Image 1 (spheres, rainbow, N blue to C red):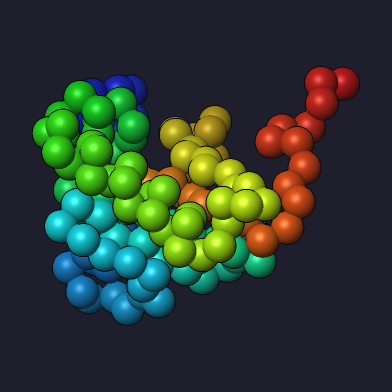
Image 2: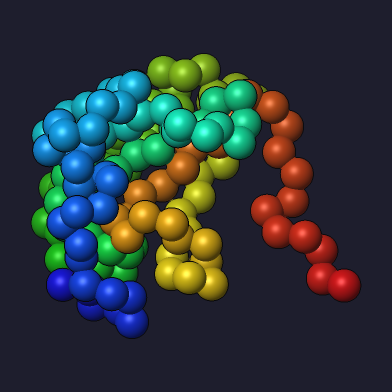
Length: 127
């Protein structure tokens, strides 16, 4: 159940289906806490999604309801994937969208790892 103003977790979302093996994904890494896979519509040369194995809509849900081991395991996989993809030297961006205004498209907490080229500003400069 969402602890934020976001809707409750929907078990039919695409990431839940990937976790259940109903939809294939080009996996980069997987452990007991999370799965990392290539985005089907990459925005940078390297664009990987990391999703925790559980039913959380947002970072607020994840950090309020997951165990310390699940939280640490998730973030360890994020950083190990970035390292394994050779992104540490040049740098990379980790991004998570929350809710409609934040641009969240799938109601399952996840982060994007972007890299492989120089990235610009996160958001446009104020007008």
